Image (cartoon, rainbow, N blue to C red; front, side):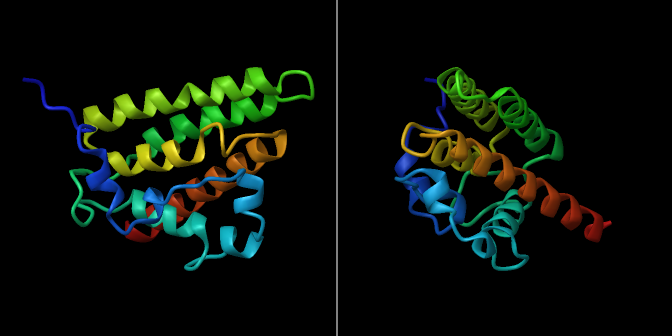
Length: 157
């Protein structure tokens, strides 16, 4: 029988990591306070960057930290969606964003890095992406995560 990393998904939801927190409202509402998103140490972007850099997260099956190339691949997709967004094609762009979820699930299972999948799963869905503003918030948040991740990597050298 094949080992399926997502078979007991709920066991991963019980771990106290920010990336596992479920979001049940549009991102533009959930992330309305810029200070809570962007500031170092206490902001969501900084905390996500920290989580993506951790190995062996408490009680999780993650055996590696999330690589810069995996994060950049998602950032590039989000940026491409944001760049092509206009008033007439919101649903088309949203569907392109939704395609990031299975791509990330595959990479997470293959590389045993569930924290990135949890982030994408909780941030890219029908409840969180309801307007063009939500796509802009996702773009800004993920860009900030990459910035903090890069800064943290540079400190570690």
